[in-house]
Length: 584
Image: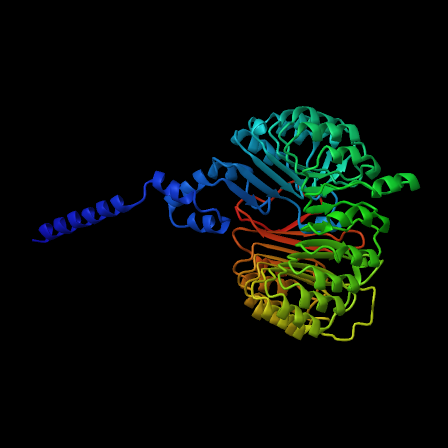
């Protein structure tokens, strides 16, 4: 009787399993479904469902971003993702942009590019950010099987290579539609690369070599390039004499994006030639304008009404000229400038540029921005999504108005400079609280203030109201480890945390990292380090790497912690101390 019942139960279980298998998606059908999902976050969630979904996700994923090149081995990436069309690879921490890292820190692209060349033959997009690229790496890239299909190549804030290294890219990658060297430290070894690009490429749509120090590019090669590339819509040229660009621009009347040449060291006659140039009438983006004086307004104003993106960072415009120009920019959506813009410029911006989405105002010694400018932005720019301001003065009320007027902000960064000492309305705890309560969609937030400008209570407010934050930078904030832990308990979605010159110790960081369940990356400069670093052992985790760096001359010690699926790196400087690493 028991054997009969057991046999019936077994047959019933097999029938149920057979029906479930019939209902299960085949790899082919699942592939078709996953190809419709574009969000990286959704694809990552899909890969966690089961082994089949992870395998199919790996076979169908077309684009991946490696946010930390040391978090995974190159071979592990290519083993999982077999049919990629595009890759974005990030190397050094953001601190590299401010010269806060040791020399020879690492971040070498070579092993990755070698692996890409061996694994992919149809790669179309390659973006490298803050990595060390050698000329030999670029030569290797030009020999890769995908060099014939590569259409987009970005070298963003990279270093270590010369224009000689670009020459084989210009000759071999003939399908390039986008080539950008934006903000990279490129050594000028001649302009042959541009001549080769003009000769070998007829499909280029966007070229950006607006890099400081590249002055060997010739107007003749630019004219040849523009003549051969009929689809060119974006051209950013950097340190090319502006007075010589008139002929090039006449050959490119349909340009939509232009990064102009330089106005530096022009005599009176050549300056008159430069400022009288007629810009393409279809422009929606204008940048460069290197060392452009107020007289350059006569060149820019005829196209100002159509501009959606404007970068005035490198101009020599006065505050008055900024105000005059912005009063004509009714369609502007993105603006970058320096503090010479002043409160007056932000007031004009608030009155005129109602569609502004992105605003970045960098620091300089020529001007200043206070709560008056912040209030003007809050009252006039309701569509803002991205805001970066370097301030000389701020109040709690002004921060609260940002929370009321700019409710769509997703990325907000506030820096309170040290040039002006008379900031009266401190601490800023209440203002930060009301800013975060109003900007409910904020996912990226930076506060670099002054000591005593934000207390432990202010950090607790960030934890309580910044529950959607994924990236956070705090500088000169807080009073003790207690504030850091309160912040950590609340910010459960935080993935990346950067801390500078805050009064936290090893115990505080250990407790904070344990509390933040989503944290993947922590960078700290200046903390209460012990000689042994023993308290950091509390961070021990099977996949957590912790690196401690001695002080850079004039800078305090640094700590970098990140989760990784690979062994500790070996390309760091000799001074690097690994306190905790993946156990073997």
